[in-house]
Structures are given as C-alpha cells and as structure tokens.
Image (cartoon, rainbow over all chains, first blue to last red; front, top):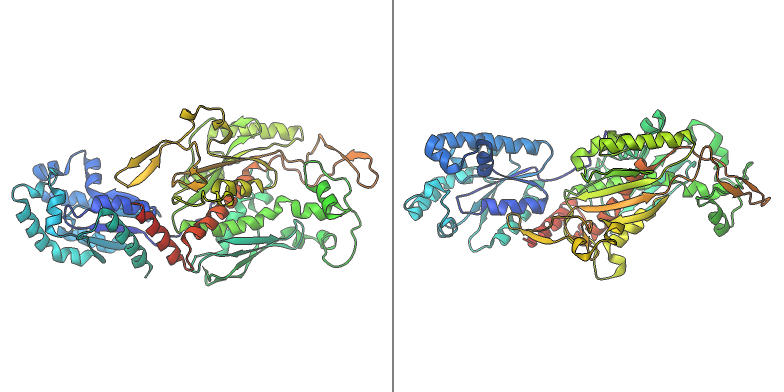
Length: 185
Length: 387
C-alpha cells in the first residue's frame, strides 16, 4: 500500500458567467496555476456526442442541450471525487436549468462568477459563430440575458469577480487568489 | 528554509530526526510516515519480515491533533532489533565500557577503514553503525513531511528502477503518481513488466553465486512550479543541490539530470528542449525532457527527471573481498554484516526522499509562508502572475 500524502484545499471550482466573460480562457489558466485538471462542459459535450453545441441546439433544442450539460457536469465532478482538483468552466446558460444549479451548489467547493459589462461581452463574442443564442441582434440579446440571468448567477456563486477593465492575466490572478482564500474558511 | 538533522546508529536504540521550517497547518499522521518507512523496505529477495515489519515511530514534537504547529517536528524511529533481544544493549551501550569483539577487518567498499583512520577508532563498528544505510530511515521520515508539504501545491514525487545489474528497461514510458502502486507492487519497483522479469532473473543469478548487484533509479517530480533554485550563484543551482543530495545516499556513485551523460555524445541540435507556447493554458512548454526539467539551475515547470546509479553492495555472501586486519596487518577476508543481493529498489524510495527534501527547501525559500494557506497562496499568486 502506498501512502496518501495528498492534501489540498481546492476540490472543484466552477466558473459561471455570460458568454464572452472569459470562463474558458481564464479557467484553463487558473487550473494550471493551482495544479488542477480543467474541463469545459461545452467541449466535454462536443467530445462525448461528437456534435457541436450549435448542432445540438438546432436539431434537438435547448432542453436537450441542458440535459447534456447535466451529464457533463456530473462527469466532471466525479473526477474531482477521485482526489483530483478540478476547474470546470461552464456554458453561459448552465444556470438556467434548476437541476444544473442544484448540482453545482451541492458539489462545487466554490463557484466563481465572472461578471463582465455587456459591452465587453459583445466585443469578445464578436465573430464567434458557435454562439447560437446570439444570432440576430447580439447587443439586445446579451443585454436581456444579463438581466434575466443575474439572479441565477447570484444564486449559485460564492465569489463574484467584476472583470471590467481587467486583462485575462489580471482575472486569472484574482480568481486564483480568491479561490485559495475562499476554500480555506 | 527547511532544515533537518538526523542522529542514531544502525543497531542503537533509535534514530531521531528533527525537521525545522515546515509551516503550521499541515495534516500529518504517524501512519503516513510509517507507510513511507515501509516503502523503504521494498525489494526483491527481502524476507517477509523485512517487507512487512513496521518501523515503530513516535512523534515527539511539532505536531498537535494531526497538524503541524510550525515548530520543529521531532520523530523517533525505534530500532525493533534493540527491543527484540539484549544482544545489542551491551554492544551499543552509551555507558562507559568496552566491546568484547572489536571488528578489525574493515570491509572494502565501505566507510570502515577510512573512517577508522579519520576518527582514530580501532573498532570498525564505531564507523559502520553510523555509515550504514539504516540512517536513511530518518531521512525518509523527514522526506514524508516534505512530500506532504509539496502536495499542498500539487507536486508529486515518485521513482522507479530503470536498471538492475546489466538488465535495463528499454521502455521510455514513465510512471505517474497514479502508477505508483503498480511500481511498488513490482518486486523490483520496475514500471515495465518485460524489464521486471529480466531484473528478477539477474537477481536470482547473482544470489546463486552469492554476489551482489547495483543499478539505476529514476526519480520524477510532477507539477513543479517554475523557478525553484537559481542561476545567480553556484550554490543555489537546483541541479547541483539535487546531485549532492542524491550522491549522499549510501552506495550512490553517479547522478544524472535529464539525459545527463548521454547528452554529451549528441550534437547541439539534438541536445536541447525547444520552447513552445500553449495559448490555452498560458504556459511555455518544452516537449522533451533532455534537460530533466531544469535550465540554468532552475525548474522550468516541466517534469523533473533525475537518476541515481548505485554500486553493488560491498558485502558479499560467497566471493569474499580481500582485506587486511588492522591489528595483525595480515591478509584476511572481510566479515559479513548483511546479505541482501541488492538494495536498488529501496534506494529509489530514499532517492525520492532526497529530491523531496531539496524541492521542499527551495519551495519554502521561494514562496515562504508560516501557515500552509500563506504558502499555497503565495505559490499560486506567483503562478498566476506568469499568465
């Protein structure tokens, strides 16, 4: 038998926020800083189904996609249970499903909400055609989303980080130190 | 800074080690240390007693309710043989007196003769009791603390045997921490099963002839931060510190960092690790490990690879080595103190320990912190500042 010498204050960190808030780019970097695994639920869904987010939305509808998110989240959390620290970045709409909110609240050791102004989001999502919910009037759609989802992000989040005027590197530093302090208490 | 001091003789009452410089708040149990000590007994051809006997330890200070206090940690490792019989009580007694049977035939390949000359001793036991590798048990206890400390920033350290006698592992596959159980379950602590069979055959052949075997172990450290060690002065270079630490293990005669001696024979174009950038994680990467995860005496953040070569044990069963009696000056045969064919698998665990102690010292130097939280926060902030 080998000894288990592992000890770590972080178990599973979940990043939530609107599309373009930087969850994926920040998440991967934060994971490296704390020596954790990184999972992006959208990527995991694409990997498991062999289909793009856009395809699933278009062909099966949003409800089917939210179901796929539940499985992806559960899979990600179960690898955290194996003793691996994990950083999970999620799709912007993951909080829309009550089951997803419940799973996140129950299983995450901390939930970071990357809160960005709509103008920043719009700039960052500019030409990304894989965002099916932004077809048409993107500014209008984003503004409405920000308003509709505010309460939901607030409900699940244990840390809120205002990313206004911050570079990705700054956000990585903020998230890294925030989760290190948070989990301790 | 993390420092430690060991004391104790091989057949004395106990070994002790004091470790100073650990932060407060590390979760430590006696069992974790005991399990590491048990790993030090691993290896082919060792009797069941050697394999399963537990080193009895006492945590004398620095730990309360399962957590370090930040004060020096003192650990006592009892010598079971001392308690099993009275043989050693008289022989190793600290009280004034004299031995009835001084050892005057120093064994070649050991510290015996030079130690007697250097310290003005007439009994080789005065030397060999401390020169013996039993002392590494105290280091392994300290190393368990260093490993626990490093685990707070997700650094994993393990080792595997890559050569036993002339049997070499030809596989380039390297175990990760998830494979450690498999490695420890191998009687020769080898990760490759073909090589394992060849190594066991080699040991059996040597055992038949009453001879002994050396070999090579590779120590791997995963998840290291960038920048442990330094280029600014010779005595701060991490590769130099690792080499000294590994070379200090009994019977180790060579240390390699990365591809080491092999690199000397290559052309420059084939001898260095190219730098690339991973934009997703914001990391600079080196796809190869020719430099073993160090450049300029600093960690690069890549896998650390170091190897230690051990000479065959100098105490043999059948073909005895020639020596001279220090009283009669006449040629004689060296006495036996122990009879294992090889200690290479166990040496791997000691090598892990030495690497862990060097890295823990350097990590504490770079990130500091009196509590675990402070140390971890500092390490993570540094990592984040590089993004």
